[in-house]
Length: 151
View 1 (cartoon, helix red, strand yellow):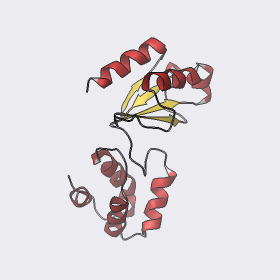
View 2 (cartoon, rainbow, N blue to C red):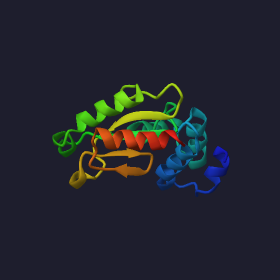
View 3 (cartoon, helix red, strand yellow):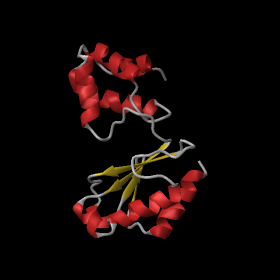
View 4 (cartoon, rainbow, N blue to C red):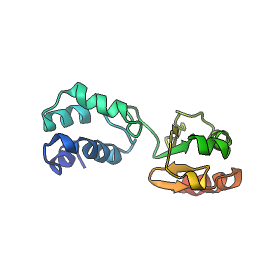
């Protein structure tokens, strides 16, 4: 679906900005917002490009650079930290062969840090795109990544 087709689904009202940015990012195969998409969004909403860019830059759920097909977000809130959240990051870095903030060379996975996933009662947690995984340990991480590699 083109940027224009996505924008046509939304009334040109400022309060639609976040929904538009989510739709545009979700539609892009590399899970990010392009300069073109930001510019077209600004025109559609009659906003400055810098104001649209500022919103996209402010919220960590948006990316302005290409990412993998699967975006892995690891929670590093206080609760997850107490429940060995840093070990989760270490296991993922080992399994994926990348550091936090990087994308695998094949473009399949991007590893990111999240301040909170709202899963404190089931920490440590991570999210792959929209799916949440809880009570993580090295074995569960390997199993989940193995399954996603099949896609």
